Length: 137
Image 1 (cartoon, rainbow, N blue to C red):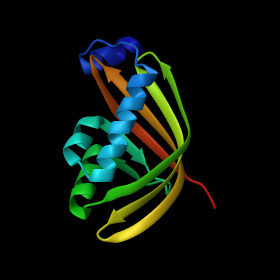
Image 2 (cartoon, rainbow, N blue to C red):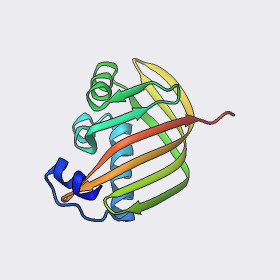
Image 3 (cartoon, rainbow, N blue to C red):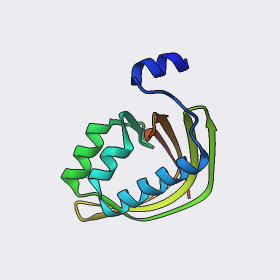
């Protein structure tokens, strides 16, 4: 598998560290809180896929377009039970989160388990997949 990934990215693969995953996660949350589309564009992998809690899937371009049009931000994000595991160039972060979002002036609350997959190619670490599962109150 490693050789195929290396051939597809054209970049040498090296192991991702827990610190790199945590730093990229923190950068991602900061960008969501402030609506920093430019930073999100660099964090999301070109093949990024979001699977929302309702099962809807969105690509990088769909997410960025939606964020731009709606002006959506996440002013509050609280996380519990953060765990990070790494294997080669892949890092998996899991976290239970409580967040609030503002979209077109409307506020929404969410309590979810998130699974996030980060990938390292060359010196670049990107977010390639997010899976959300709602947690019932």
